Length: 374
Image 1 (tube, rainbow, N blue to C red):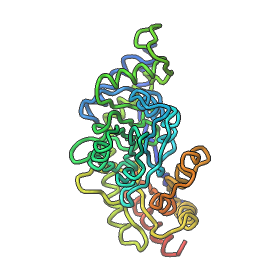
Image 2: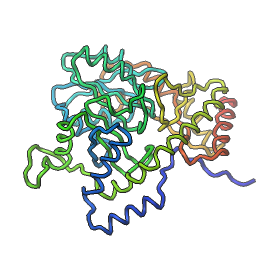
Image 3: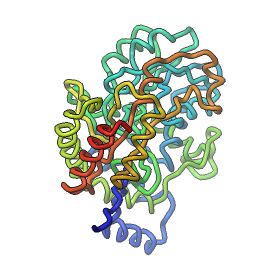
Image 4: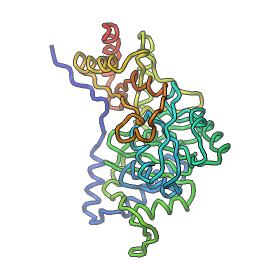
């Protein structure tokens, strides 16, 4: 019997066009922040965020950090964030000197719950920063209602949501800024990098200053800044990927629809719902194993890998407010929906490289593993 090839949970797609773009930049001799970065910023703005001014940086975390600083967030402020996400969201708040405050999630979309946010607002709250987790838009109407009542800002962590829409509007057009990650396993990549979509030119100028040592003109430093620039090498990769991300997204959505149909019939599996008016771009296809403990879920992950050669991911097994690095910001926090999700979730492969036989093996593997009581 032929050994089955392993199906990875994610697979970056880098082709000949990306390699040629890198060679073009290297041959030009201009590899730092130059014309490729400027072109990438404009093309990203036009294609994904309805023309909002975009500023390219060297990572998604840098994008969050600089966006927060440019928005005036600092010591003494509180910013409400989800605990059920990657630590970069809360890290970026803490790096400004502000305090990340954790709120709970909605059980269907795994996104920050506006009502939970309302409960933790204080007189120090300056902003709320929802994450469009796994590629499903957060409840932006809910957040805009909460922030309008409280007189606070809203920012968007759109690291996983390139091309997602909420009631016809692309994510990235709701907050004072939005950050998109360009890490290799995201829906599109620049090799490494981030893009900050800004509400106005003032915000964009602030991010530009901060990414480049506090200066727009050489040696005319206006603020204390950082070196968070994107290279032309990375921008050239990103520009090619922009021409492909639409097709890749449709493939992800087709794969998700197939998985929905076949996995929803398996007892104990809850497939990811999509709220009315939302476009999900499936950075992750995340199911729940209803009622599972973390140990039970981990056995499912192990069995899928060992018995069926199907990779999967657990995003995120330890909520941020329980991490050693961030627990001091939430010494007695209880977030029941966050805790439940952290124990039950598994992200299955949904990437565009999957073949029909891969999808069949994923569904068969889940059915057999759960049927065996793993």
